[in-house]
Image (cartoon, rainbow, N blue to C red; front, side, top):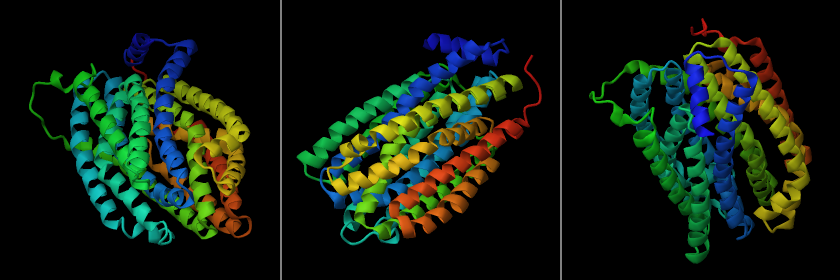
Length: 460
């Protein structure tokens, strides 16, 4: 299957004709490993939450309190990675492998520096963060300990994100998928050892996750830098030469994504502050429900990875109609799969929450909000995959504004209003309405076609 993928990807670069069957086969074969990688990454957080949840409400609430901030820092590292990896996809599509490797070198250097700055900042604010988020002194020490360990592991997360993104944009979804699965297995082992054998509780969960990041970062970097047949750096004999244009392009692509991640993460933090006054039961139920729901929307992100790769390489090859076809097909596939996942989430919400916590009050509240969210999953997929299409095309500014408009003006406004009367159920109702709205506006942008405006001609 993977050799066939190589042939189909080469067909994109070389201007060969592709029928819909070839395109669908390529989308599915690239999406499946990426979906597995996305799901197993979320499973790591699911495992943390499940194991810590067995310790009681307070440990669960301590992780839930800082979870949105943790995701904020992680999303900034992902944005930085995409700024470079999208360029790699474009150069590979143009059959310019040497420049693709040069971009990889620049990405390794620049993202390392960025992650060290972010990690230092995160560590510096860690002792005050739980209180800023509305947590009390009963959960603040554990929340601080968890966040500090994650910040120390942030450069590893950055290296893993960059290496994985480079492999995916080269068309290799298999290696990141396998490594993600192994990370998940190791996370279970490490968490069990540090949480239950060494009795470190929340701190043990953070250490286990950090060690998993260490394995994932080193192995993905090894395959990207030393083994990938396109990106392997040993193929170049010339000394490293700094090219400012690569960094400028990375900033042009990645800065809107990073600002979006920062403001979206800020919105998640505001959402956490809206939930915090509702009590520790609501904090824990909100955190667990977010973790459970993420297992259902990760297929959308997996298909989105495939969309970024295929659109990016089609852009580099200057194949406008092929680019449009890949975009439409990936969006439709994403919506169909996530509609199915919405049904699964609605039906099995009690079982999903039951795995995470033995506390009945948390399970019942979490089940209720998951079932509210289930109805928004298809339109959430439309937003996820269309955004990934835009990223592959290097079109990140306006889509970032669309995400921010939807989150800040629709979700948070509604959540603040509805929480007063309906509690956590009101917050999740606001979320479902906002995700539906976001899907609609992204489908409109997809249909307009402005994201393809800089593709001028078909490649001969």
